[in-house]
Structures are given as C-alpha cells and as structure tokens.
Length: 175
Image (cartoon, rainbow, N blue to C red; front, side, top):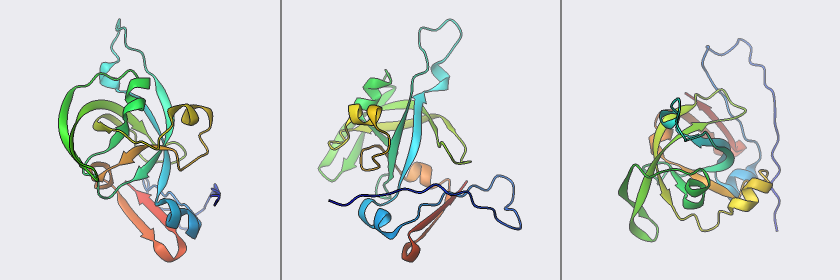
C-alpha cells in the first residue's frame, strides 16, 4: 500500500507575476505517477437557480477532481448530483471506457479553493457513475485524493494554460 502526501507551499516570485496569473503546484513524482493530477474543488448549486423567494438554497461540497484529458466535458459522480439536489437541465451521450451512455446534464458553480483560479458559474456539466467514488468518505475525510468525484474535462482545461513538468512532477495552471 502506498501513501501519498501533499504539501502546501507559499512561493514568492520576484519579479511578481502579472496580475491575474495563477500558479498551482503539486510536488512529488509518485503523486503524479500514481494518481495523475487531482485537485480540490468546491461544487455548489448553480447561482442561476438562486433567486429571491426561491425554495432552492445553495449547497456546497469540497471534493477531489481528477484531470481527465480524454473527457470532452467535465462530469460529476451521480451521487454528488443527488447530494447537491441538482435538477437535470438536459441529457446527452457521453463516451466512456465502457462505451456510450446517455447521462444527465446539470448546471453548477465550480470554485478552486486555495488557488487564484476564477470560479466558474453556471457551468454545464455531465454526470456519470464513478464507481470508486464514495460520497460518505468524501463528506467525512477530504484528505484522500484517490476519492475523486469530479472529472475535469477539456471544456475547462482548454481555458487554462497548463504546464506539466514530468521529471519534477510539477503542475502550473494559469487562467
């Protein structure tokens, strides 16, 4: 059994980077080699549905997200959609390793805690059965990066400049 440790660093860059530049770093060869790149995100009820005198209330949950370069759109585990009380806004086919399936689409707000990456509001995402994701474990213990309930697809990654330096297992993201 291998254990993955994460490390938080504050880095001062001199001269300072241009305003709006965001840097996210993950150190450790084994973490990227074993897991790929996972980051903590916060999923919330889409702000478009939060209107005065509405019965809908914002529900949020921090959850690990896995960068999936093979995914066209960002997806969340079906159990997360249920937990957040999301209402499907449409459905569409997605292509998975197990073949093509039709899944529900939802609107969410997606934030990136502990970074300066911009929050994405009213983002349309898809859902899927992430068999290994355990919602209860996510609620009780956010430190297990292997328990990811979100697949970040190329729809989000295409908005960022991502540098993955393999030899040092360092990832830089800027938007």
